[in-house]
Length: 450
Image (cartoon, rainbow, N blue to C red; front, side, top):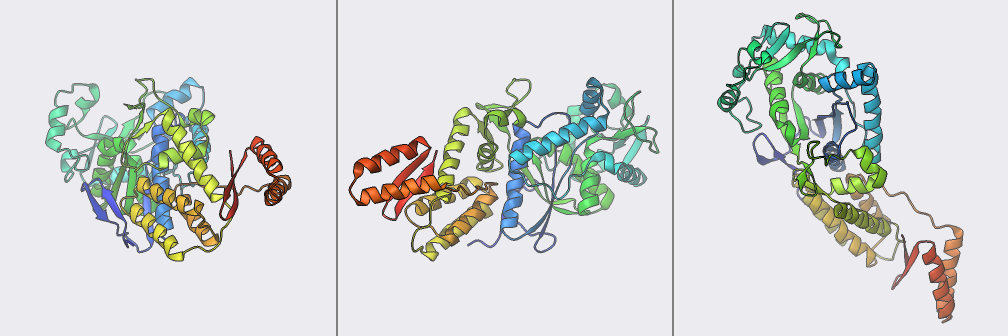
């Protein structure tokens, strides 16, 4: 069995052995949603991917502090709240509640903490003041910008160079660019427009830029350096790039040891986007797809690869999950070879240790299910299977056959023993009408529920 987990680190573009800052503990920060709408399936994929990674780290014995924020100060929130004649807080609260409901349906464990931007305003202002005092930031007409040219290896995470970015921005002539020393500098603080929600600061009334929020919440809760920072691949630039620049400028320490980014969701082989009209919210998907089926579909693809959302893929996930459920509910058999069970557990760990390869991990579980269904099932096997399935967020509630069904199965067994096959067949048909299918094996009768 491999002893170490390897993580594909976006910063180095390589597989690296995972060594936490503190033995046995993991500090993990994952960018959460901007709460102005229901989350779409792409957001859901990110939430499921990092929940699965968290669960596997816990499976391997780590104590994980898992932080995922809510961005509740944003242009879209201000606009949405105004359209619904609500305060920005009430508008955000509504969508946070919807997020909690949708992610619970996907079997996502609650975060250790879900910090909200509005609760960290004093810390954000203090962070920006510090950057200004250190010469990394400057005020211009009530806005505060970060001096990108002072950042070491700026945009390395996204495999870009500062020269490329400056060249790309050189033709900009908009009003905001005119206020900047350099067109690639980014906003840490924005002066408030009339009627907007705002907070008092040394630069006048305003609100934070998007990037500063995550830096402040991550470092306030987890410290100057954290083990893992995750999010969608679309956040590599500029969001995570800017988080690194401002965090390391303020603290003088490395911000993140392992950067992890999940792949996109495609719908029928096209990237999901509002402009293409193939934008699906988790809320709407859950109206027709069981939450555990949607979770299974999202969790069983390796997190860095794009995932293709199709009707067939969902149907396949449903079929596969049902097979595992029926396997899980089988009655116990006789002797089980402990070495064979250990082999499955080892193969599962080896697969998952290689950058959380859930596609290979679930393949091992299906091999194990086939072995179980050929007559290898007892309490130790069930306990091992339960723990593996929990990594994928799959928890099967125990099905209990009611007394009438148990009686019918016993009557059928008696009829078969007496060679009364007409009665045995009648009882089989009667059970089939109730969704109970029987399978006669060398170890006795096994059943599945439709």
